[in-house]
View 1 (cartoon, protein in one colour):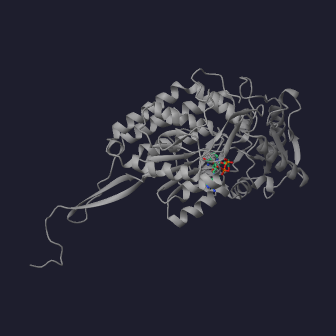
View 2 (view 1 turned 135 degrees about the horizontal axis):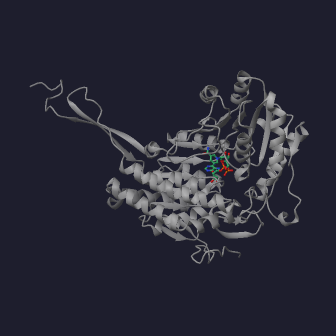
Length: 502
Ligand code: NAD
C-alpha cells in the first residue's frame, strides 16, 4: 500500500488500519474507506471505517468520559490549558498535517499549511474565550437570587465535509470540548486522514480518553447513526444543503438542537467606480482558490453594464494565466479537485449549462497537459450568456466555475443577487463607501466583504442565511452553542410561599 513518506513521525507510516473509538485505536467494524491522492489517483491509505456498533460504543464512552469528575469538575482555566496544549501540538505538527491533507484532498501545500495553523489558532482562541466567559445573574424581580448557568450537552456529534477538514474539525471540536462535552467526530469519506491525525494529536496533548472519537464512514450509515443516537445531545454539521435537510428531519424527531453550515452560491459585485485591478484579483481568488471547492466561493459574478466588457476581458486573461498543477508544487494556484468523481460531476454541470445555451469564455475542460492526465483536474472556467434563473446560476457547483451576469442599477442588482435559495456570502467592489454599506445591508448573506473576498477569522462569527445554514460558529459566543442554559432561583427571604398558612 502506498503511504505518505514526508515526515519520519508520519502517523500513517505503518498504514495502520485503525479508527478512534471512545479512547482506543482499533480496526473499525465498518466497510473499507479509501483515501486517494487526487493529483495522481493513487491510493494513499485504505482502512476499515466505523460501524453502527462503533458509533454506539463511542457515544456511550463519550458520555461516561464527559460525566467523569476528572473532566466534569475541571475549572474553566484548567480545561482551557488542555485546549492550549492541543493548539500547540497542532502547531508543532503543522507540516505533517499539511502533507497529509494535501495527499488526501489535493489542496496546495500553502493552503493546507494555513488551515493547520488556523486550526491551532481555533483551539487557542476557544481556550481564551472559555477562560474569560462569564455567567449571568439577571436582575431580581422577587425574593430569589436568579442565576443563569451554562452546562454541556454531554455528547456532541460533529460531522464535517472534505473541503477543509482540519479547519472544519477544529471549528466544532474546540468549542464543543471547551463547553465540557465529549465529541464524536465523523470525517468525510473522501478525506478522512486529517481527522484521524487530529485524534492522535489530541491524545498526545493529554485530552482524557473517551472525550474524542473519530469515526470515518459513509454519511448514510455512520453519520445517520450519530445524528439519530438518543444520547447525542447536539449535532454540528457542515456540508451540503440537501444533507442538512435530511439531518434536520432526524433531529426534529429527537427535538435536538443543530448547527448547520451549508452550501452557497455567493454573488460578487463590480460597480463601475471599483478599482478594477483589485476587483479582478479578488474575483479570481474568490472563485478559483481551493479550486472553487469552498462554500463561500464567489460563483456568481455581477458586473455593471458600463464596465462589463472591460472587466470580463481582464478576468478571462487573468484566469488563463493561473497555474494549474499538483498541490505539492509551490507554483500551483489551482490544484486538482478532491476526487475524480467530483471532477466528473463538475464537468457534467458545465456540459449541461452549455447544452442549455451558456457560452464558455475560458476553461470548460480538463487540462491537456499530459503531466496532469492522471489527476482530477478541471480548468478554471468562466461562463457567460446565462440568466440568473438558469440552473447553472442557482445550483452550487463546488468547483472552479464562475458565471458572469450584467446588471443595470442597484435595484436590478439586488433583485438578482437575492433571488437565490442560498445566502452565505457576498463581495462588493466599489469606491463609493455609502453604496458599499447600502448594498452590504440589503444583501441576503451571512458574511459580506467590501473590496476584499474570502477573508475570515475565528474571532468573527460565521453563519449562513436562508438555505445556507442555521446557527452560528466562531466568535466569543461560539462556545455557548455547545451549552444549554439552566436558570436557578435561590430564595433569600426564608418566607413561606402564599399557600402555606400557619
Ligand atoms: P455532504 O453533505 O455530502 O457531506 C458532509 C458530511 O455529511 C460528510 O461527512 C458526509 O459523510 C456526511 N453525511 C452525508 N449524509 C449524511 C446523513 N444522512 N447523515 C449524517 N451525515 C451525513 O457535503 P460534502 O460534499 O462533503 O461537502 C460539500 C458541501 O459542504 C458543499 O455544499 C459546501 O457548500 C458545504 N460546506 C459548507 C460550509 C459552511 O461553512 N457553510 C463549509 C464547507 C463546506
